[in-house]
Length: 115
Image (cartoon, rainbow, N blue to C red; front, side, top):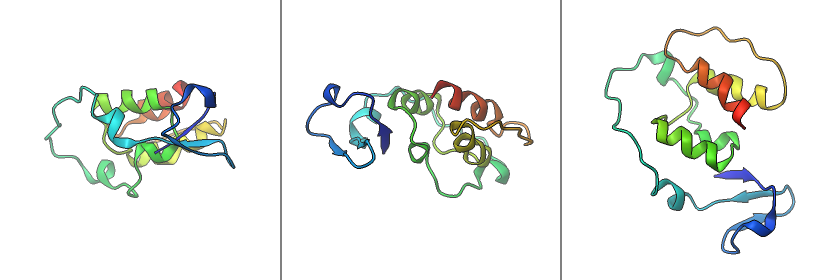
C-alpha cells in the first residue's frame, strides 16, 4: 500500500521509504488487523458493481486514515465509478457521473474531498 508522507520524522524506522517520490510503503497486516469490519454483505451484486479492473482502494494512494474508514465501512474494492472518478477528482478536476443506483456515486464524490 502507498501513502504520501507529510512528515518523515513521525513514522517509525521499520517502514521503508522511497525518497525519490516521497512515498512510503506501509505494512498491510498491521492496520487492517485492528479494524472493526462489519459483517460481509451477502446480497447478490449486479455486474456493474462487481466488474472492476482488479484495483483496490490502496492503489488510489489515499491517506491511511481514509483507507481505514473505507474498510470499516465494509467496502472491499472500488466499484467502476470509484475507479473512474476518484483519481480524476484527486487531480483537482471536476467530475460528473452517471451510474446506476447503489454503485458508490456518493463515495466517489466524498472520498476525494476527504483526501
